Picture (cartoon, rainbow, N blue to C red):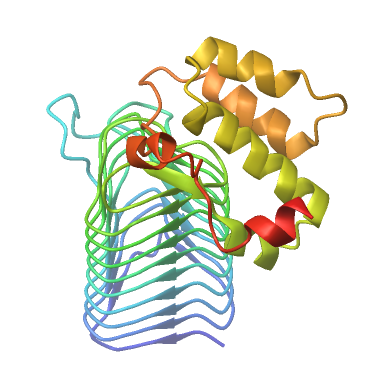
Length: 279
């Protein structure tokens, strides 16, 4: 059964799955696909060429798949916005499609975008990502799976944020943040996201290897090339550390800095998990 409020405007060219509910005064434009059991609140606009996976929840005032804020966009360009299954989009979130033909803005499954988040054109956001209120994600940004972004963050175009990274509130992200790192409110990497690694089910060996790699790269006083070589000296690197190294090698904008104060104090990104991880 599909439940569409009488005041909602739903294009006959849209595909609406079973169990969908669409609230008052919402709009679903041509060429949209709304997956089964989605709930779309009142005063929501699902713009053309948008696909929502199953069981998504879209709250009041959200705008999904709208034309991009880009001078290069030409009306009539066919470009898409895709949202994975079980994703929650809170009040007044804005998500823009690409200005380039046949290109995508993508958001994965199980992701939470809190109120007033903006996702710019061509952004690629992974699965089970959490983005808190008022964060602005510029065009072409890549955010890997399970990253956690606090509120009021500004992310520059083309930056990448790695898997399970955690970013502090009110920061400006100008360069890439490698996987598993924590970026503090002073806009410097301060260590590993140890709690996130535990919650994600990483065993103690993997957690220790990740923490050693982060310390080597950010807090041992080595340049980037030598730090990566030092990390790779370890036999049988776990795949997570291999991903950390490969992510850094592929950077085009550079890497956000480590906290110099921690390095000068010899702390090397220490946290409450030191004794457990290194025992």
